[in-house]
Length: 223
Image 1: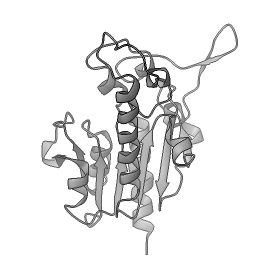
Image 2: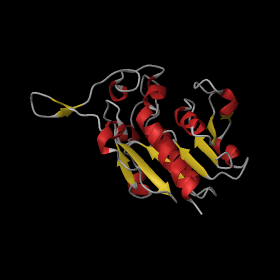
Image 3: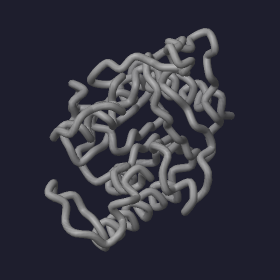
């Protein structure tokens, strides 16, 4: 199994990298930040496009920065006075969004034959194409709700383990709700902080395991 080379792009947590390593694959996380997963020897602290050039990768799973790709902050694209927080608005934010779109597309069209790019619901569905699959953490056993889009190349969709679904709580008004527990399960409801973006970008354990297990099986099935 060690002959397969797996790159986890834009991942400092090493959540997915470590799951592939458990299965015996030659996996490396990559990010501009140092790793927080405890195995720095399996982390490439560099630009992801430089990492892509290092070797012939069989598979990449990438998590490009979603700050300027989500639709939730579209209101800040209009020309307006600067925000007290210093966050980009107007022309600067539009320029940042265009750069983020180009970054995403450059990842997708790189020379790695099999890849999946993960991002929340956002602008790529309209400027690129609809995602191949939209998953939720509760589909893989985690007590949380967070729609996550997957754009794939050369890979099958993830299979949902119906026996591992996390059951929702039905509220008094009849709506479904999953528990909100920090730092991961309540990521959608975290208040402003210096760590907010980093916490919200963490991969849920069930999704990390599913990506590693199912795509390692796929690699091993190749002729």
